[in-house]
Length: 82
Length: 163
Image 1 (spheres, one colour):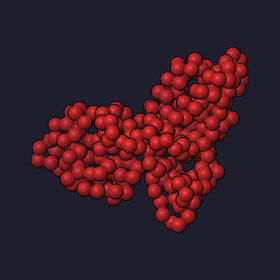
Image 2: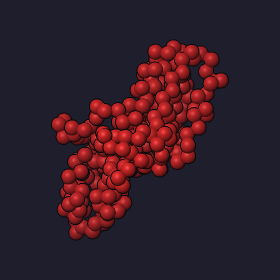
Image 3: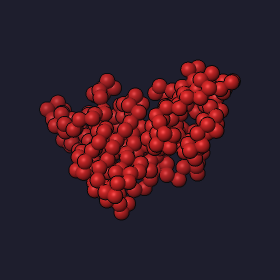
């Protein structure tokens, strides 16, 4: 399946783009497993991923939640508005 | 009470403060507190030339609407509003405006501070600073991951007020 990650904030500079797509032989079962694959593919993101919220549309997912069927996650680093 | 769930809280245009005050609509309110956060020319000893705000708009809009609703309930407000700028801002530009209207000043002041703090800590908005030496950096922020482990995030609630 294809996994896609939409990036925001400093993640964009670290990854070199706003989106990363991975092709995997087997679908990861959980958000946590998907993020492990992302860290393997993009080591520059690895130190930041623990502090990122993983989002489907407007719902923040737990690491133990099933990966969305779309294989798409939005990753939000620590926020700093105001 | 005002339902703000369908309003837009993010804008790439200068914030029209007068439109947020709703001065004529709440005769029961004797207190109006307004906070305007502006872009300052320094941060942690570095001279700042400009800022750029970005957001994950779908969730930022939802979160700010929730914060407004929670604030009205918590402080018994008749009205509160938040507006946040996105895009490129210069020194002195208004980045965020929070308005709280209450029967008395104490609730208005408290609610206005609560609004600002909650938006800073919960809304997915990011601030990139551009310094006079040509470098840039994202301001350290607050983790909004709900299942983070205690101790994982020393910066989950920075002490310094970035406004």
